[in-house]
Length: 223
Picture 1 (cartoon, rainbow, N blue to C red):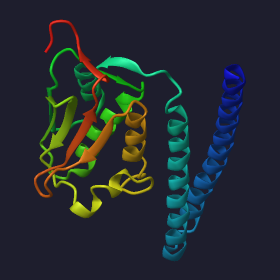
Picture 2: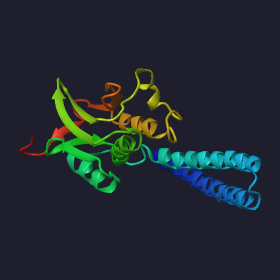
Picture 3: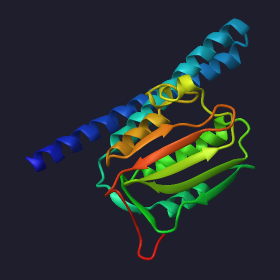
Picture 4: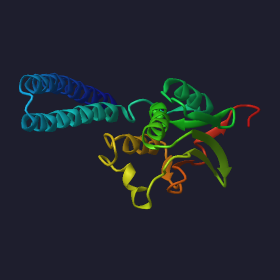
């Protein structure tokens, strides 16, 4: 039974991959044609309609990328991963500009999580830089409370409005593709980890990741 499920999953992934590839090729044709029309017919009315086509094509491309990412969720076996090292790695790979990233995660902190945790951390940092508007500092920290470990990612940007604190985790909601935080919550949920936003609007966003007992540990001698 397990082998049959593995084979079925492999075939479905192959079909999805081929379908995405074919759709992406057709999107390239649409986007290229839209550009040519706009260049050959520089009429404001035509440009507006071409813009609608181009934006729709970009949206479809974003959805295709999301399906590829979502397909990978839960495929690999969760692993114990050093959280502080992951944050350092993501900080080095993300265009921060003038924004300062502070990593106060205790050394040796490990969490049992899906291998896509790096994407979760990247998304939090990238969102702060791109949409925080006035962000100068992003800080990661970790603290035990009761039988759980709380990992916090906070910034000093514009923050999240109360009415949007839960909506931002819904698929399709947001300023960009609307997929990042939805996917992040799904990735964390695989091993029972949750994420919420509880910052103060106007003072910055604050994402709190709760890691339950048994899903975090400290390397020998730490913290």
